[in-house]
Length: 106
Image (cartoon, rainbow, N blue to C red; front, side):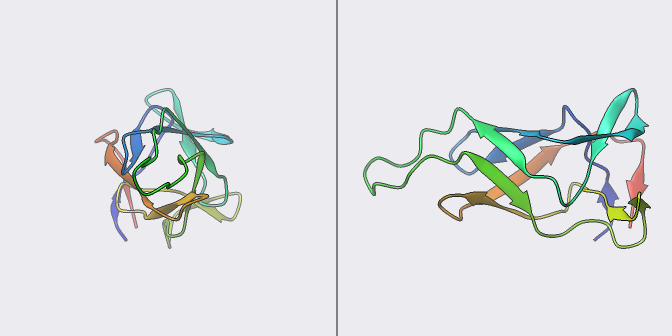
C-alpha cells in the first residue's frame, strides 16, 4: 500500500472523533524532525466519546493492521497514510487523514 509515511503529529482519528498518537514513535527515522511510526506499536486514542445510544465503549487505543511492505526500520514495517487500523475495545476503524507530504513509501 503506497502512500505518504505517517509521523508523530499526523492526524489519526477514530470514527467518533478521538485523536490518535503513537505510543512508541520511531526516532531512528524522522521526517521534518518528527519520528515515524511502526506498524507493531499501538496508538493511544484520547477524547473519544463512544456511542452512548448503543452503549459502545469509547476507543482507548488503535492497532494498525497494514503498513509498508518494502520500506522498514529495524526490520519492522512503517505506517503510511493508506494503512488501516482497528480501535480497541470496540473494533471500529481508525483513519489517518493528514500526514507529511515529502516522503512516500511502498
